[in-house]
Length: 213
Image (tube, rainbow, N blue to C red):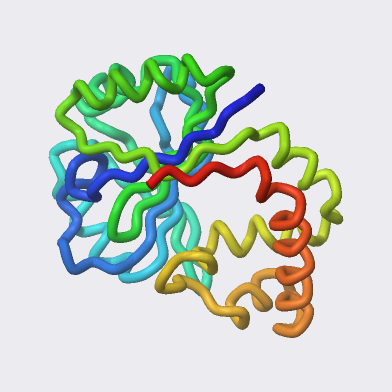
């Protein structure tokens, strides 16, 4: 069994805590495998990227922020944390595998565990910390993998682009037109792909999904 747990955390409590409270964009860290150095170096941002960049460059937890690429709906940066921040985050995460790190009005983190006992131990550790992590969702990843095997390559690509662009966020950070432009197809094609793909995933994974309230 492989479990994936989703935790939420107020945006101001952890990374990028100095972002303005009224900033309404979306931040997603990419390439989350915690290699020795650096930690979580690539970030994709939608919304007011000028305000994001100005705030982050003034943040003492960040040593540098370099713009790498600009698209119609997002900007990608390379970010380097201060040594103290990197040590603190590594200590908190320990050997945990991070599958997702996204911030809108709050942080959403996904963590992968080999068994329930590992997840329970991690939850105890973070509850003992000064951070307000809240467990939102827990699922058996093996069931998700079975469902994904029934998706076509095009459906997987469309879902991946939609997720990365913030299409499933509330409120949405991207429209069907944005996705169509990035994929080079019509809005109708994107809509049909998403409906079919989400239908497959919903049908085959709902029994393996546990929502924690």
